[in-house]
Amino acid sequence: DVVIKEKGQLILVPRETPFSEIHLANMLTLARMGVTIMPAAPGFYHNPQCIDDLVDFMVARILDHLGIEHQLMQRWGYGEQ
Image (cartoon, rainbow, N blue to C red; front, side):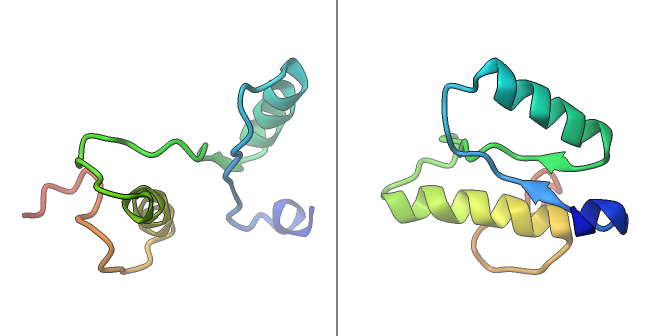
């Protein structure tokens, strides 16, 4: 509430699935307030070898969105090699 009120950056990472109508309505309300919704749904195109690779994927995406440098994996969508 305070982050929204003070117009800070808030990222919601829901992990429950499936989403109910209540979840979706609440996420839509939050998104309209400027909250970023990033479901904990890792990609598999990077060929993960273990659970830690999936966790690192999500953490790296969140850090990328916040502009925080990391060494977990290549940045998302920036074309770096």
